[in-house]
Image 1 (cartoon, one colour):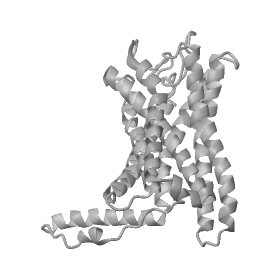
Image 2 (cartoon, rainbow, N blue to C red; image 1 turned 90 degrees about the vertical axis):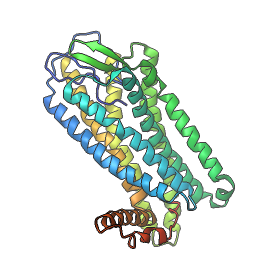
Image 3 (tube, helix red, strand yellow; image 1 turned 180 degrees about the vertical axis):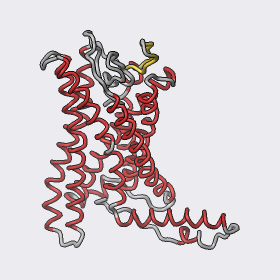
Image 4 (spheres, rainbow, N blue to C red; image 1 turned 90 degrees about the horizontal axis):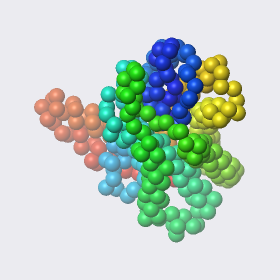
Length: 354
């Protein structure tokens, strides 16, 4: 996954590589590609994703940290790590948005490497945590008697640590190979892969680890969970089934077009499909549009995984009410009577399904 397509250009004559995480060097002269409208599109979407993703995921983290003293469920732990992963991801977007706007990389070599690594680590950890949450739901619903024995908090923390270590290790090439290069149009944060091994590695991590395996796990688990839920005599089963369908559908719709575009790009670099200007420009535009569209998925995670849950929503509303009362008390001379609502409120753990 890349911050933006490597060959996205701002002029009609110069190929500008400003955050080319997953693209490979081209030997041929660049085709003419006017991208002023694409530049505006990328900046607009990046800003919206940053604002919405920061607010939504930040609120999830604040709610869970606020109630960390109470009994924490496994679901709370997964939600916290999912929101934290998405926060890491969205916090890199303002830097790339600024680069798109000014046309060069002004933040230095260290930030180029670090942000590239953080960007990809946030992406992979978010995907892997969604997979873990799916497996946990499957275990709880299909094998409820073994949950208390195997799904302990200690085991959950060990799995969480493994997910983060795996994500950081998978993203290590971004830290090692990313660098600032001096191009004709200024300094650029470049991630060029001139080795076939690295090209296949990027294809495997992006398409297989980032889409195919997670999607297969979700489909396999939820295809068995849904029939079990339908048989349960609970008023919430219809809402839960809809939620599960929303999780799988959103993941598929948001990430599949981008992964297809990346795969076509890989085929083009290996001369499997035409490498003429028409194909090249269409693929550049496709990657730019599908990538920015895929990034908006991190804004949906708080809605799908957290705010849909009634218990979590109560926590969030209590927190927001506490902030409002605290702000109001400052203006009214420091009265703290209303702000005590939060401390007196009872906290209920998130349900397993959420």
